[in-house]
Structure formats: structure tokens, C-alpha cells
Amino acid sequence: MTINQKLTQIQTKFKSKKSRFNSFGKYYFRSAEDILEATKPFLKELDVSVTIKEELISYDPPVMQVTARLSNGEEEKGTGSNKSVTAVAIVGVDLDQKGMQMPQRYGAASSYGKKYALGNLFLIDDTQDADATNSHGKKQTITQAAISSAQLLKAKEYVKSGGKVDAIKSKYKLTKEQEKELATL
Image 1 (cartoon, rainbow, N blue to C red):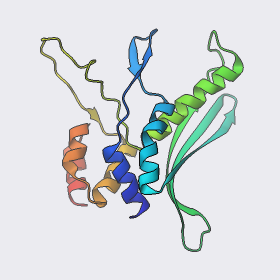
Image 2 (cartoon, helix red, strand yellow):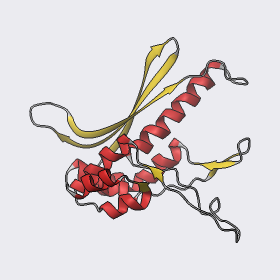
Image 3 (cartoon, rainbow, N blue to C red):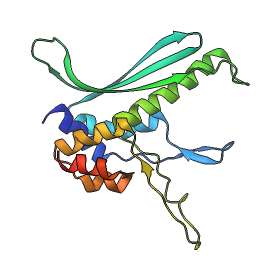
Image 4 (tube, rainbow, N blue to C red):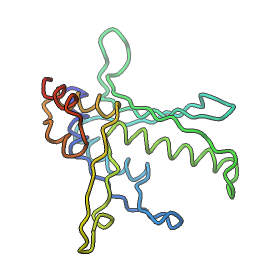
């Protein structure tokens, strides 16, 4: 199984509930730790590893680049490096965040970056939990989010490795051009 096929399997089977609650904003969310915990069964089953690299790419203002990497440990011929797939998140550090010490500000940016890099790698969407979408008897319209360019690239890889366009359409709103492009892969 190729690294892309392994990633596709994780992307299609991955589940991580939004089990943490933000009392200030009154919403549930998942953390980077929740995402990593949910990937552990796949790591052993598919013989892959996940690593996260953080790098300060700007000092004024401080900006971090966080890279999530899925690797199968196999060496690419002639390169000396492992076959892997990466996803990146870029986050700023809010130096004016009230009520936080400097290490907490960097830690918050780090956690946020990890969460979004992992979300990009595993195609985790931010659809609402079942409780949040409960209309309590009121009529409600649910709209799908448009697919981002990064998600579209991953969707193309998913379709190329045998995934179904209908699975992508169930998660994201596609334009007719995007749907046609995916159908021809």
C-alpha cells in the first residue's frame, strides 16, 4: 500500500469528536491532542508515523509554520529520505493577548497550528456536532462549506487512489467544474 493509499484510508475512516467546551465562546471543539489520540489506531494498523515540526518563520511579527507529516518509514530511491505526505498551517503569535504570559502566547499559537496542520493532513472538516445541529423541532437549512484549494488537492489524491466523488460531495460544496474535474481522474 502506498503512502497516499494509507493516508486516504485514515482520511476516510478518521473520527474525532469535539469533546472540549469553550465556556467563553459557548462552543465545543477538538484539540490537537484529541486528533493525535484518534490517529493512534491507524498508526499501528498501517505502519505509519505522524510527526509535527514547528518553526518560527518571522520574528516581527512572530509567525509560526507548523508542518504535520505522515510517513511510512520507507526510503525513496536515491533521496535518503522517507516517503511522506505533509500539510502546513501558518499561525501568528498574538503578543497583546491579555491574561497570558509570553510562553502561554506561543503555546496557544503552537496548539492552534498543530490542530490545523493535522486537520489539513487528515481532511478534518469543522461540521457541527449532532447536538449543535439539533433544531429542536424547528425547520433548519444546513449548508455545506465550499471546498478549499488545499482540500481539493487532497480530494484529487483521494479519488486517484480509488475514493468516490460522492464521498467528497457529501462533505463539501463543489462547483460543477470541480465535480467534473474530480470525475475525470
